[in-house]
Length: 305
Ligand SMILES: Nc1ncnc2c1ncn2[C@@H]1O[C@H](COP(=O)(O)OP(=O)(O)O)[C@@H](O)[C@H]1O
Ligand SMILES: [Mg+2]
Image 1: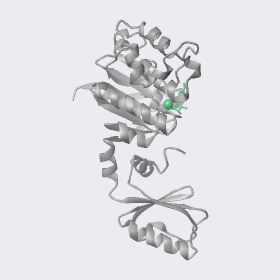
Image 2: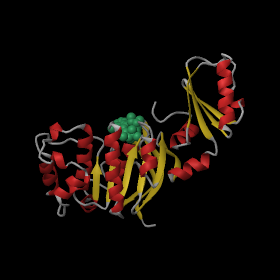
Image 3: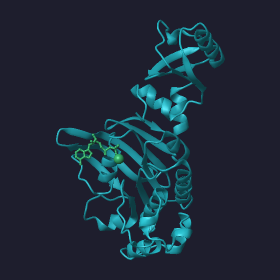
Image 4: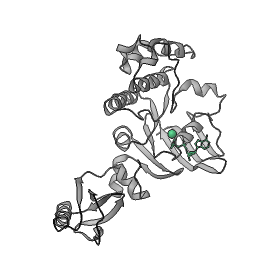
């Protein structure tokens, strides 16, 4: 597959802090690729280097065949960027905002069509200052699309949105894929990465700790079913890893995730312990293993602290 982005050994430091520590990955044309990781993992720094907004300390970057830099205008014309925070001109309407920014490019998309694409038709003539968080994010994505770019780089496009607004934006992003655009997005929402991304790189402390298709990453690490139990007090003398079926037990604050090859046996054993008063159980859920489990397994932490 032809690459839209290649990154080799990217390093970026801020004084003493090494924010990005030798990243290598590539994004194929037409792919939705996710950089997934908790706050501080180095996602924004990475995308800012790709956008030419920051200069890397080491490594090689090619974006659509070009070396990004603040003055590479040929590249900028082919790129659509949504920064982690977008500042709008609050008194302009949605339509005026898109028209204004569209005029900055030699070629731009039809503004009406864009507004429909991000489902802001009702707000066409509303001032930006009156938009909800979700509507502003959709406008930011529309702005990233205004120059009809081949490649979109979206930094946490759905951060802080309610589930409904998030879903609406997911559909917009899938629409971009149908138009054969390439999308690089960052997120700390696991379910978002699973739903949207063809491939993901999981970042932790500036390193890639796993890379691949969401389903295969999960499959590579888990044959077991996670049984998650939440306790309302200490479970003295209970060795969860020795319960029937349990291959691994990963403590996580007040919860313990039991990765089980025989979940019904595990659940029965846990209920018996609860009945005998050896632990006080607040909640028990059985779920399908997800990227969240991959992250927890590889780092011993949850992505959202
Ligand atoms: N301008 C900056 N100056 C100093 N440190 C920074 C700056 N931007 C980010 N960092 C640090 O670099 C690390 C990675 O940050 P960032 O790339 O923003 O991660 P993410 O987007 O995954 O939350 C963090 O430790 C952060 O505190
Ligand atoms: Mg960030």
